[in-house]
Amino acid sequence: MRVLGFMTGTSLDAVDMAVLETDGEAITAFGPAGERKLTEGVRNLLLETTHQALKWPRGVPAPVIFAEAAAAVAQEHFEAADEFLAANGLTWSDLDLVGMHGQTVLHERPTPERVGRTVQLGDAQALADRCGVPVAFDFRTADVAAGGEGAPLAPIYHRARALASGLTLPVAVLNVGGVANVTLIDGEGDLLAFDTGPGNGMIDLLLQAHGTGRYDEGGKLAASGWVDEDALQTLFDHPYFAAPPPKSLDRYDFALDAVADLSLPDAAATLVAFTARTVALGVAQGKQRPTALIVCGGGRHNPQIMKALAEVVPCDVKAAEDYGWRGDSIEAEAFAYLAARTAKGLPISFPGTTGVKAPMTGGRIVTPSA
Image (cartoon, rainbow, N blue to C red; front, top):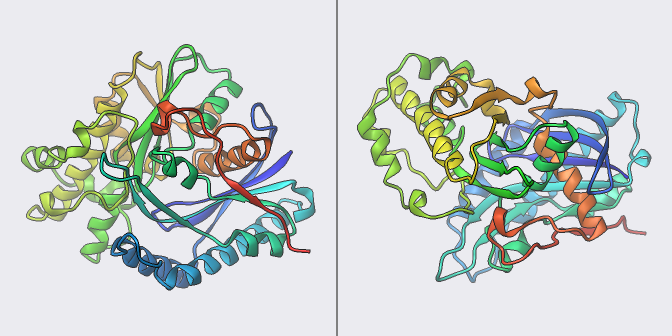
């Protein structure tokens, strides 16, 4: 089937889109991929929605703004894809299915005392009605309800992508978005995957808090600073690093307090080192040393992050493009793949990826209203 996958990350940067032809197991063809930047109005709405979500107590109705944001996300997706399909000589009728991840505004990992909580906003029914194509969505909540982390979900696609590329296992795939997550694929194809720590998120928040931009373009600020080892150790004192994988994070789980007294360049350099060293710690959790770490997501565009990874990860560190992958589109491709698996009733989360007790199906599908 031909599936359009969407992804909007916690960086609130863009709607990523990719088309795959897949039966949910093999990938038979790669269609076009692209992105459209979020409009400023929708980005601001989602920032406010996220702030309200972080204050939302359990057991009370969801904030009213959730419905407004869900409608806006669906409309933003439709408009982005309408332009994207037309630019690539496709129409909605060329698609069999759409996979919409939705915008994460809250992710709380489970604890021994309570199940987790995760919220991805996007009005799937409205999108299906607009585009006339069935929409798969809500990929995480079933896993969370069953005691899983609800994240990461891309690992089963990472394995399919590695096999489609003819790569020799074991390999590791790293996505550096707001949060960084790694998939360790051993020589037998078994998966271990988890969030390693912050990706770009803390660096972005640092610059935004100082009014110096939305992100450290080209890593220029971090390149002008020095790593403060004391501040770095304070960051590593977070209890997350003592927990065994699988495990997951929200981009707001770490505060900037540890670098608050540093100069802005030193703070940025320290946060880059934090991202890289948490990845190295994560890679060491695998049973086998990978032959390569394939880096996807926006973080691979930051030369300082790539340099820091190469210094501390004990294998080749290469950007996705070095293997012919579309590094900005991997997660959109993944949700096209997961949509196909949802349609086929195949598992999308596993004990080694989310900690759920047994492989689980997930996601729901809505069809266009008559």
